[in-house]
Image 1: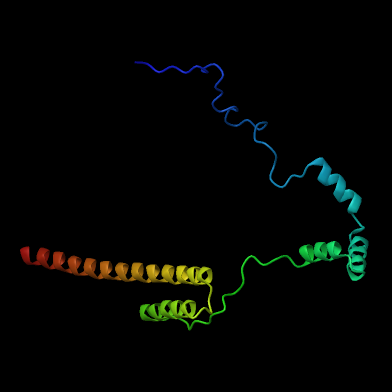
Image 2: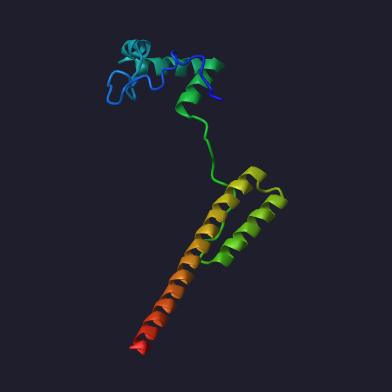
Length: 157
């Protein structure tokens, strides 16, 4: 049983051939005509506009104050976690850090979301430590196997 497509002649596949410079879309960073026109209108007047907004905000215009603060002091995407951990020099230090984060979350001095982010960082360090330990053990085993094989080769000669 053969499956046929009802829109076989309409399907375009890749609309542009490889190397077609006309089908790549807008270049990165390009702006549309309206944005360019607004930029030319505002050019050279930015300082005056900011002074006017500041004056309006000082007169009690809350929307001007909000606009000013939103542009000049944007909201932080993240803040430093309110926990101080000692530097880790071994895997047992990382275990202690996880316990500290858990205890801080348990006594509600650390939010669960913050605790999750911090434990994620610590877990990544633990995984790195484990990978480094495995690499070291493998290289030691390879060295032992290599010495054993060369000793066997010398004894057979």
